[in-house]
Image 1: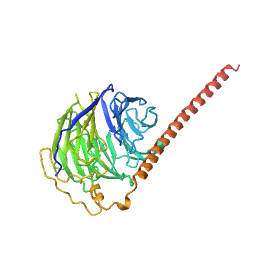
Image 2: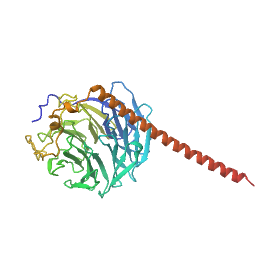
Image 3: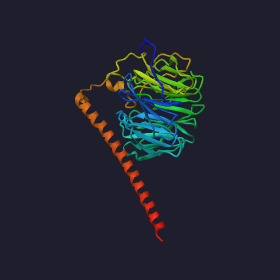
Length: 407
């Protein structure tokens, strides 16, 4: 059974600054930064320390629809209705590289857990995978027959899941680039999808006001919730895997206990549709955004675990729970060698893979610096290309002038 709740979630801070509806939010891995995108075409990055300044970054020519920090936190991807993706270095300079990713609105961006690739989804009905460094196109997934609203990598990076206005959720094998399975239980557009932290389940939200949870190994529908009175726009798993939070056009956020298959909390804060929600990487906080142009940061409180390295990911929910059910936890048998949760992995002796903390910190620092250096090189290359183009244009103009001046 899930641990008893000791305290309700509390609204810690709320931010203004966007001039139109907030469409997306994401925390950096160390909780130092919170990024948000808006229909006002601006990206805002806020430092979570009190009285810290917010940075407003411009570059996109139309509404920003999605943001995602890289696993190291040293890069930030954003997608836009201008059909481009930008990769930012989230510091005071706000430098970025841009590439035209799709032939229509980019709805979703998500980094792979190794930070080496990026998946994007678009109204052009495609899902595309790119290399993070130099933004090189790798391959496209093309079986959706309507707009693709969301695409996410699995925690181990081997699978991709996508959600579409064709009312399906599709599961893809990254290596073979084949569609493994199509989930067709939604009665309307599917707005959002994500993997359970264990990688063995997915949850999807829809315009039919529902949230559904499937097992990706058996493709069995595990849970079905119909708790909102309007479209569910976004969802986010708590890192422990025990809870799921949803954001809806009915203006509420709802927190679900996946172990017991029941509603825990309904949160009222936004005036108008709640458009986006995301847990921090530790689960201690979550952020939401809405059409009221506000970003709100909440303290979770309901899962008083140790938020350090010892956090365990619980096994995924296994009972078929409905929105009216209050079912006990039942452990679903896992086929041998398949889909082991992090909990079962952590129960094994770890001496053989332990590493001194100083070495781990040094390696993480080197990787993060490589991220920034590579991105800086990409920015310089882009500027050099622009300079060359301008120089060519100047030479062409000069030749035209000389030709006209010659009798």
